[in-house]
Image (cartoon, rainbow, N blue to C red; front, top):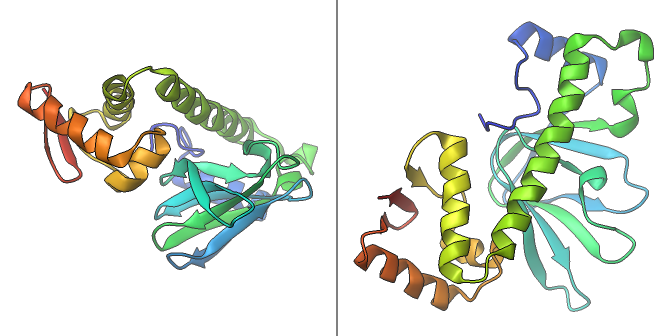
Length: 208
């Protein structure tokens, strides 16, 4: 489970009671399906249980750009997206996804039901969303492709607790995520291999 999961610190019984309290429903989305279209009126939030999902921006030509990706435990929805009054954003299923979906208002609709693990859940939600944004900003602020890659791999290693990593997204999508040309990124990865900074085979990368 992701280090910054919405359910960190909750045992099985607490998690089950919380899901009932916020009236979260489990939904399945096949690969390629649109999960949410994000608007200012959106009132749904999702927690990814299994699969892989992308936050994408959609331009006037219908082209999509990857702004963020979500692993199991991550939370997404209109509350955690860029300004929906400026551009069109959507959550799409990159793989088959199992998602808990609930209304935003359900988190605080019944104040009397709020308890210590409910508060823990809210803290996790805020921390998880904030952490992902901070990480992506840090990656994009790096000035070279190499620094962007190493910053991304460093965060991934910290989260997974290992220096041998299986990338959660395809390399072509990684280039989109860190906003670089794919061919230039692949050349840099080959250089880093030759300089014994990393070893890589497909999506498996070891930091040396």
